Image (cartoon, rainbow, N blue to C red; front, top):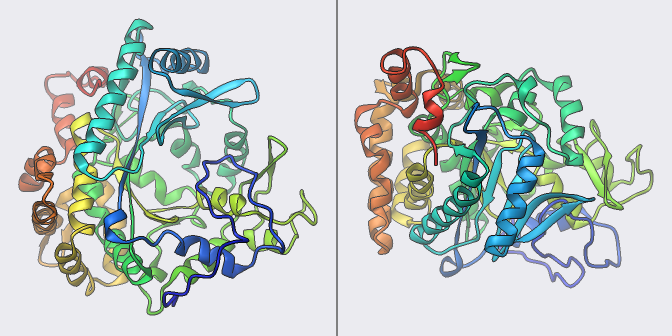
Length: 464
């Protein structure tokens, strides 16, 4: 265990960096495993400095044909946002690939999914205001171009062959590698959208408790926010097809991480896991070097075949951590990664849900006691069945919706105790939890009835 040990960081030069990043502070000696542990531990901060970082992705489409928008249109949109709303351009070579402003960033996922990574903010009110401002800006520019954006977990109409590929070097490496390690990796890259929230911890002990609660309850978030029931114009048999996709992307870097629940879990144990995860790339001289199939442990020892003798920097480590995709991901904060993308109100409900549970000591302790008796088999069962069955998934002597109702109450009470009057952000999921009917099931009812078995109306239904 870490036991509060924090080494002097004069040589580490720990700073926030957004990949791709390659420059870092000069070091007197090569990185060690302990440096990597200390990097994660440097995220510990007092409760007064805990913040909320919300990220969401959305699908762009042409209003006239519902077809995905291509890179040229996305570039025009990014330029419009930069000019009208004073965003700073992010370039890869001569291509605009994103924007930055006041701690926020806009980036492109492999198939052109448009992502906002929000600034670290103090309250759910602030993060929701940030989302609303972003959606207003995007809508203002996109409408003039005949484009729209909608919130779902999976592209409902178009096959992967119709999805454009964004001109980012890392995505070409991933596109070539994914089919070697799973059957659904390209679907993940090009046809999924998520909403997630990033949250802080105060100590190693606090991190462990939040990590375990987050992993155990992630299937409940998946069910409550399930919003991806269509594929290529027809029902796909799931309420969260996006969540199902992650079960066959690359098992070396996905899943619910049973070792997190074992005695002695720590920052160091996560580092040991991440060291063994196969790499995708190293960013050097403004280009991505393909390092697929080799581990960061190889890199630490200078044994990368495409960069012989090259040793990693902390930025390389940070970049590598972004290529690991478990249901909860540890960086210098914890990422809750189980929810489908959705309409704007649910983009605010997701951070409210997790903040209420994880940022209130009483709620966190109650949640921890709730899940501590769940077996590895039960957690695996939920991970497997929830994408298809949602809140109707059988669990012990009832259904998952009954557990979700208890968890929802923990979240609401936790938000009320925080004192920021944030509990109202849960209203948009209250009926889902009460009835057990997921957003996906409501869409399926519309498809079978009012929409006359067409998915086309969903683009208008979930238009931002």
